[in-house]
Image (cartoon, rainbow over all chains, first blue to last red; front, side, top):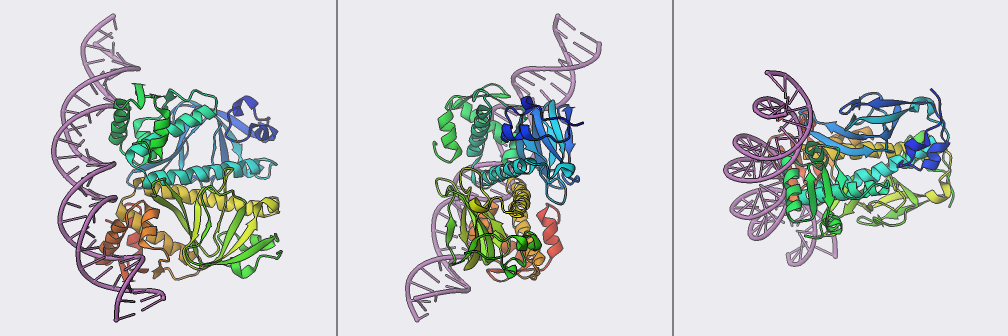
Length: 223
Length: 223
DNA sequence: CGAATCCTTGACAAGATTCAACTCGGGTGG
DNA sequence: CCACCCGAGTTGAATCTTGTCAAGGATTCG
């Protein structure tokens, strides 16, 4: 199958839509159910993925099952960048999702794709470094505040409302992305709700009542 | 100053030396003392750095001074990749070091440099993701075991002895790279020494007595 | 040789985890 | 249609790992 990237799929792309539109490489699309494993850590790499709609989580496991979620991806986000020894993480859908697949092997030299991949990789690296600061040095409260702030900002950047924030992932997923337990995440959310910083009408929807305060808390301020 | 990259400076480069040698872009060299800040988080980016000799640490700070070290770099390693909003971290020498500077702005399109930068960035991203797993999910003991194992493997890859491992960084630096305190790092090292897994003839030199056990401990095995 | 810095060790405190019970909601089948 | 069941989430109590505070020892460098 060979076709130009459908612009509507990249309208909210993390990479420059104008650039993406110029690319015309072979790709295919797939409609995946929730909880579908796209590839596993260690699988030979060779494909790039672009999320047309839906949400994906990337994670790594320790031998005893402990899990670290590296990030959540949404419409317009790309993933699949890998080094020599295959994918460094497992990718799994959080909800029914549409993804575009690019065969990287065949199109490594496609004009423009290299540039996009580099830009995306650098952005991911910067995000990973920010997350290292969170995981290594922030308290549970700061971690949750950062998580909510970032998610809200990400949605806003795509033209979606900054509040309420929809949470397509479970408490367990949030915990594994912040280096906490389910119980701690739940307790902090309850605490923030009691303090009037956020609202929790239902478990998967967060109203950011004091957004600035939340952002301040994320960096260690606003106690 | 315009000159070919000196091959001897990249003999142990993390990027392919053959590729690096082909590049002939303007660059200059600098000899820096220990504890020298090369650039700060937020500084406008525009240069790439290659360590000719010595060691460098990269770190981020929270407003109250908490610090997360993102990584330690040694001879042949590159750094300075940055997104749009300047450098994402501060870079500081651990010891007297020689570095090569590449003006990225002028030479962004230099044939070959792009490819190297992409490869280096992907490798850094993979390393950052591995570190996220460590920071979020490993115990103090596993963190220290991983740190020592990795450092040993890195030195070995450069043709240096895998043991003893020299530690050019302080306990505080190790702690800030593992998301621990100085005291915890010191305690775990003492414990490993008592158990006969490592030797600590002096504070900045670690003998890996049970290297396989240490590697097993790093992933949660070998209790 | 002395001062400063770094490292180690101990006692205690605190933040987060573990274990367990309970609630809430949604889906299912009687 | 409604009761039941199951998974996800919340909350509580006890525990534990790691952090904090403090003191003592070692190493380096002027």
